[in-house]
Length: 87
Image (cartoon, rainbow, N blue to C red; front, side, top):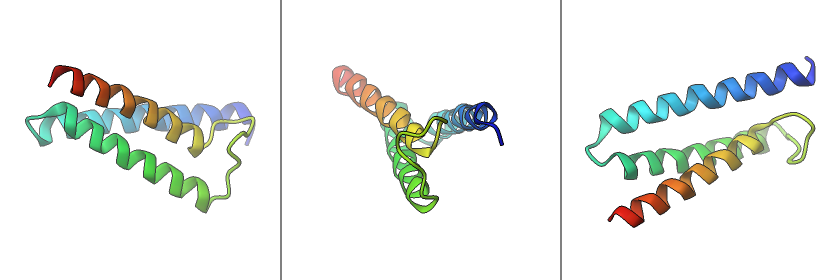
């Protein structure tokens, strides 16, 4: 598989997973921000465990589960900051 195709697959997986997380957070609990933050944190853990299990390199030329975990962690930090500011 070429590097470009693999990176596109990771990006598509990220977008699909974000859509699923947003829908679960929106319909699961009245407090969207806290639910979304918790789901993002679980996604970070899932991606880290998957990256370790698959022996993926953290600084590979293609996107990996490590990059996905970093993106979820940044979104978690942003969500937690916004939640704290609005509380």
